[in-house]
Image (cartoon, rainbow, N blue to C red):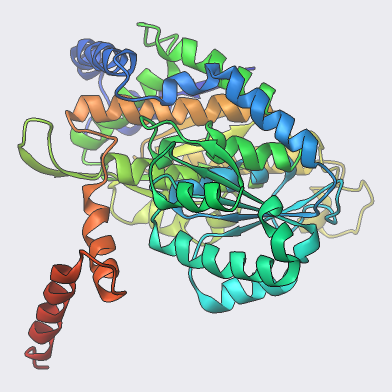
Length: 464
């Protein structure tokens, strides 16, 4: 398993002192990066943050693999009911390991499809249910708190559909992933005899892809979760090394942090040149945004930190976003995600047409073209003073994907330590949830309904 990080185009020598990092700046902040690593390692070893330990929880992986073997070929559809970190990890794994939707192979009991209900758009949920056969569907409901309104509401609809179609047998077709002995999803799972897998209390949703949140869906669609864990474990060992050359996650965290706070790069574009990594880009968008968008430091200082993550797909978005990236505000850092071995070259026929715009491509390959597109875009951005870096995976398989997900989680955690913020809270999400609870009549949230009504009264007084 090999992942390489090329930071050359982040350097001042390539994009100028105003936008690139100088050797003096890197040397000045290297001790701070090492302090960030040591501080986070202590918090992890003290049990406060648990994601670094997930790849070593082999008993959990064995339990999941045994369940997947037990139910295999009894379904052609795995229906995930979850949102945010309870859904994006499963999509990233499916997209990476079996290919992007909708070009995966025809689904069957031997090749089950993954249907992810991650929104409460009624037309979306209704169409998804209409497309599934309850006798051939395995439902996995995922909610750490056990009370997420979007997940609970969608699950109630799916549960009712399963019960109407299957009667008392419905519970055998449902698995739950939730906290141990906490939250009401655990209550209903016990009452109705669902198979239950637990999320560790010290692992937040956006850091949970290598817990049962991601491992269970991956195992059910046929991925080798042992290889996922092995790749992530290997990367974890690298992420604890106190050496910027050997520790990709720490070096990337330091360089991204410096570009952000020293050079004003308040936007990071995750730019995979691989459709298989497209789901990972959306997973990363949540990871970076929720973890690093914070109002205050750990000591209470008001800072309103945050680097806005954007997902772009190469080469597709060269034709939709790169004009802005080249000539718009120079407030962005670009993180290219490259793949060395795509598995298939995509050979272009050697036959000639007599037309120059066609014939220069004859006998070449799509692998050559997408690589040329990526390195050319990096060169053009660099020439325009736009800092960029590149992560390169040897290939996209279980080991590399597990390692890359773990690398990005460590990078995020280290960036949080450099910023002196708690990267594992999400207080900004909670107020909107409480307003929703109040509007939907949940007991104990009446004051939030009143606050919402006051908000509406204030809106009505605004005149055009």
